[in-house]
Image (tube, rainbow, N blue to C red; front, side, top):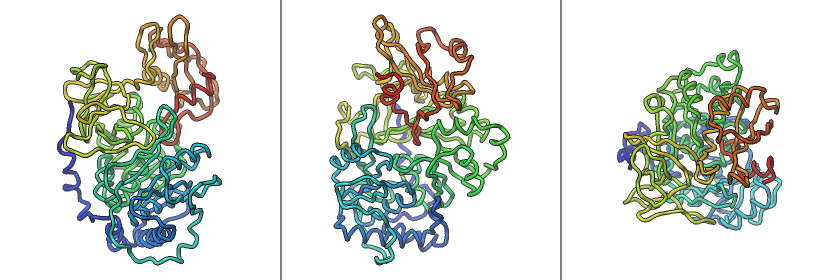
Amino acid sequence: MATNAQFPDIINTTNAGTVSATFNEQFTRLAETHGTIDAIVDSSGAITFAELETRTNQLARLFQKHDVNHGDYVLISTALPSLLLESAIAAWKVGAVPMPVSDRMVQAELDAIIELGQPRIAVDTTSRTVSVPRIDSVDQLHDYRAEALPPVVPPHLKAPTSGGSTGMPKLIVSGSPGDPASIIQTGQAMGVPTNGTCLITAALYHNAPFSDALAALTLGNTTVLMERFDPEVTLQMIEKHRATWVYSVPTMMQRIWRLPDETKYKYDLSSVETFFHVAAPCPPWLKREWINWLGPDTIYELYGPTEGQAATTITGQEWLDHPGSVGRAAVGEVTVRDENGRVLPPGQTGEVWLRRGADEPPSYYYIGADSEAQDEGWETVGDIGWMDNEGYLYLTDRRSDMLLVGGVNVYPAEIEAVADMHPAVLSSCVVGLDDSELGKVPVMVIETADGNIPEDFDDFLGSQLSRVKIPRQVVATTERLRDHAGKMRKRDIKAEFFGA
């Protein structure tokens, strides 16, 4: 078992100063102390902390006009990241729970989420229809009073959506109350600083960038938001805004690394104190390249599910001593167990189980799904891995992704990590197809710039993988295999490219 009992003290040791009990009071205080400092920067421009206070107070009163009350859900779906953050803060200010939803979600998916969550109102600037009262423009906010609202604490911090590996929609409702301490604790686990400049490179409807952006604002940071990731634009934004903390995922890191050297190295990244990555395991070769580029003290990684039962963290320097690891428990507890639920000794591979802490309340509850849990609060999301003697966790794959090929356990993540090392491959996905003799066989889709399979690709794979792991079929595409949060929906990819 790996634990870290020091994490709850992080808030007490931060240099954030006094943390208010409610978001109403916290953002009023920030308007007083940081009033002329830019709070949010996106393609629509910049707003200061004083302007953020005014706008969120006015938007909160607009919510009240639509009878949004304590504990109600507020669905938020927009391509404009500043509006998404403003709506979340305004929801907190009336005691409601923000429910971020992808603006790219198709109508049927949106209908299913609304049916599950029953939001009181939707801030939705898309062309879709919604079955609840809707705000599709905030152009008339000046009609509403700007003074602070009475302090209130929502019952839940957030309610992000997820389709998971099954594709069935669900809400993951935070067990933490909607107060500044809760969002700061989440953000500081991810290395979010105080009074710096944070660059968020991913869409905010995903849980990690949503939480990090709001934590950054709550901690007094200028928060720079990108609507769409672009590798060179990311470097430009770091240099332009002198970003001190940068959010990333491994697929973004790979796209940046694939830039020509004359492009990649012409930007000044010296302001970056923490380059944070999350969402998926980072291939060891890629991690080492970034450590060599920015330095081991700059690279920082977190592994943990959206549900928030537990999380591991690891610095670049720790990683050099434990290559391939995703770190030790920084939040909650982590164990590796066999199929009978027995804790495995170091070095043995099994399923990763997590819990928030024996004496702590649940970190979440589902709407639309059931958790996979054992006694005493232990839960799993299906990840497979092992621990070393020092409690560092190493992930191998997801239980649902593992293939039994002729009686041999084959982990797609291992094959993908090798494929991604090829200089022409931007991303890869391995899935299994039924085989009458072997049960399952691996097949692969690779993303390349020209949509072609490199001539030496078969030899490249064969030089590093045993025969049973070699994909029986390889398809190339220019389509992006991972979404803007670095997630890969293998079920959809398998259906699209292999009709299975």
